[in-house]
Image (cartoon, rainbow, N blue to C red):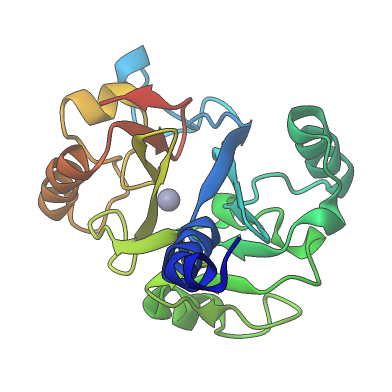
Length: 224
Ligand SMILES: [Zn+2]
């Protein structure tokens, strides 16, 4: 290659490198969540019918393995589910994101002592009160790893944030409890413990405009 052609190609190569830095290669559901009570299954909201589990998602790209809402309180169970779904071990995770402060979304946080723990600033403030965790949750930047946008999705809690990214030409939103399950989504209905159900409905309308696929807080992912 001549020097002139090399120089002509340089900006393109730089642009390609930048695009690669901001790319999500793969995303995987690690645990499929469920609700403790589900009105769509005929269950009243005043008692729990089963143990709650949240949906945990892994987002991987150039130099990062970002785990969202680690669900399992048992380290052995968390390690087994992560390995079963991805072949990875707990210490392969390079960052954690927490959508909001509810206990079922941080049940497995302590199994990841090394990587940074991110959430919105509002959620971090709540989680960092007292000495509930061995280290602090950090306020996430607006974009993680040049690839994953951190978007405000209030209603379930005031500081709730979701993650949005592109993969295989599709727009994916890992919603956390901004979307409880497919049934709640269809009715734009918030789970009974939402701080602001009307805000929650507006948030779901906004997610519908920005997503092709939604990973909700307590169900498998679905097409919008
Ligand atoms: Zn919640």
